[in-house]
Image (cartoon, rainbow, N blue to C red):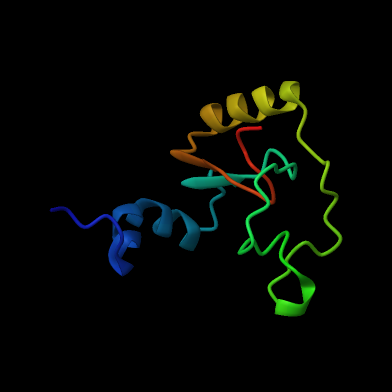
Length: 98
């Protein structure tokens, strides 16, 4: 079985390390995008929604109804493609598929 997660993963991007040393600007390999803070799950272990008494709360005043407009999402995806971003993870303080 192949190993997908390793500390040596940076070795796959030596060209970017060289570009960084040269002071070049380049697109990130991976982008994490949070399309919405809206969530309908109510998971007890969620650090964004958990009880403040458990010291896990990450909301920092997060607006729970915030979301990126669909038109802006389409624009961002087009930008990622044109920049050469290789991977996008949709995550966030909410359910990203809402």
